[in-house]
Image 1 (cartoon, rainbow, N blue to C red):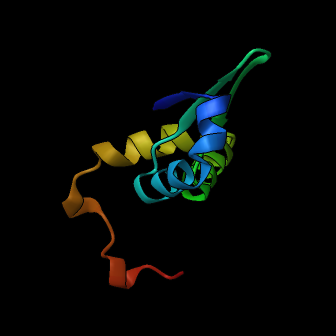
Image 2 (cartoon, helix red, strand yellow):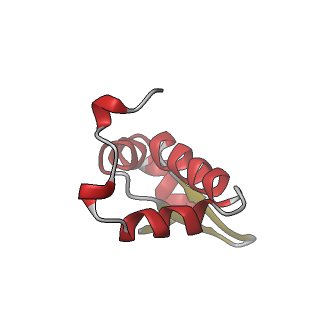
Length: 82
């Protein structure tokens, strides 16, 4: 995570935002009233999706159970009905 203060952020906003978008590196901006974090849209969407998936009861346990299942016992991708 890149750290900067509000003065430098204002001065370099275009470059900092372009780097955040290109490299998905969050920016921690410190001010006298506290800090703020800037994320790329991709990182934000990934975070929201992770929170959503984590909120589904039992899903984590199902995934962990599936990871332990031998591939030979799994259904082939082309046989799955979506």
